[in-house]
Image (cartoon, rainbow, N blue to C red; front, side, top):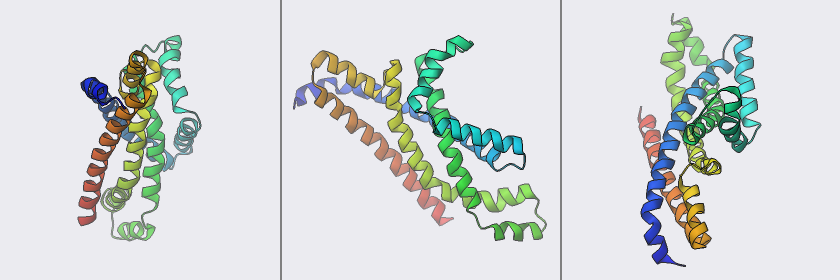
Length: 215
């Protein structure tokens, strides 16, 4: 194993890791927003909204994320949507993980004991007040771990945007393989950095989980 080469290229991989982190954070923010809207639609009393929410989840989860990236980046210009590679990557990854977050959030909300909601309503709380004060706080605690799993999947999924030449970790590894012919070293280095990012993310999720357990 050529450790000297790995040390020489390490700074460039750190620059690429910053791009991966930006992709992850922006996509996660979009995914959380899509997940919240999707869960609200899925739990709505409106049949139309429930259909829209179910269709979103079904289409996104039923098609490969790479195809979604390609549709936005290569197919977008045909319908007047001009996006650079980074923007297309953020949108595709955000919409994709949002479908999974939709089901995570919906599952957490419906798992809260309905008896507590009924008790709150008998005390005179409105439906919105019951959701805000009784259901949501408990559901948020149940969401933390599953959302952490989704976030880890998102971080690893950022590798897909290498296919549209976003200079993140996987693309950087591929580029240096072309000039050094050292695939083992380059992919090993990229893998270690991915693991470090996910480890730090896991620490954050654990901290949030502990804080929620104390409340």
